[in-house]
Image (tube, rainbow, N blue to C red; front, side, top):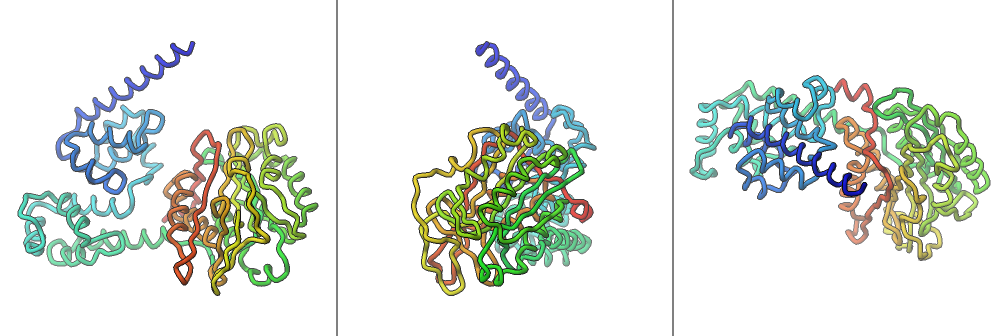
Length: 451
């Protein structure tokens, strides 16, 4: 049986590669250039420069996990953009299906440059090259290679289009409308809910995936001492704003003791509303130690104790459904804070627990921690926690682009890891652990679709 299964897998892979070869045979040299251009930033430049055929580009997409037999949509997106829609049939997509899902991975900036290149004819290109003659190599260029060179020379980027605007004003003024449209879309994409303060929240709930519409959730606040709450009275709005925007129904509870926490867990474990949802979300913002969090009465609760309430055995209503836990709390040794930074730890103590030990040994769990085990997490007294700020911002920006939750958390990791305190001496690195079996994509809010 094992041998037969292996043979079947190989046949599937061969069949998929045959389809890629058919697509390759239907593409011209100019199409290959377009594919390479659209892949800038997603595939290393050196690999793209060495690619001489569409199949070369496909190999790189496979290597970068941007293309697979099970997920060929990115290639479908590329073919749609370069107007090779008839080839979508080899990927089992229709033009209408692709239109409904766009955009996925091609950024607004990359799409703008591609649109401009299609409107810059040979005469326009000559004039633009003439205007920048001193700074350009004496080689033959297409509109795509010209724009790629401007980008490589740092003359343009997603936040600086001055050089391109100046060229268009002189040569092709009508293209300024494309640039203005891009700026509006980029500004709209960056709209985020209020995040002026940080919230101490326990967020839990059901959420429908793309296939359903009745989205429900329950948002509960984990307890904090009076001084903590007074400093952050408005900060519940951070998570509340994002989850309401995503279609959640939000409920908030404050000052949950250990006994009350157990009551909340028991209530949600048996919640009949789980039957109507496809995903459970549970967020905790509090003080913490290695592998555990504090209740309002300073009882230490292991994270594993919380997550174990929602296994398939304990909570049948959530069986085979994604269960997400986001935790803003220190996970280790306390660091003396600077004036504008506070650490979320109380009496930290190293423990031999690993992060993976905090989630049950079964499928469909995700645990997102504000920091790696053993370290503190930071909260700016004016702007709120680095992790929650970043998580909310990236959900707002990337959900409309239909990024899956792991891609969003990777972006959060990158963002938070770049932050430092005023003295430039303290940093933070979030860390997720998961046993998800499939990509989890939140439904795009209607107001985002209309942007």
